Image (cartoon, rainbow, N blue to C red; front, side, top):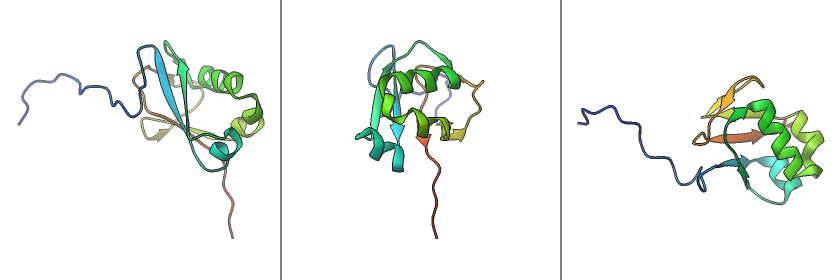
Amino acid sequence: MRTDHAPPPPNSRTRSAAGTVRVELFAGMAASAGRRSLDLPWRGGSVADLRQAVAAALPGVAELLARSAIAVDNRYAADDVEVAETTTVAVIPPVSGG
């Protein structure tokens, strides 16, 4: 049993390098972007800032991005939530089905 309270090491799957954040893309967002993830230069900021950075990196997904949910550390997050470098981020577009 661990007795220290040090934070766990960053998850290498979601963080690609110092000063970057990996944004996982799902469903129609991944299809529109032609990729499943995006590594962005990042020094921290809000979900709204992250949306702007994703839209700048992938202009073709801007309209879908505006309607998509953002999950930060596996929880849906409002645009004013802060996103740190080591955070797990996912873009989840709206889905429909029958």
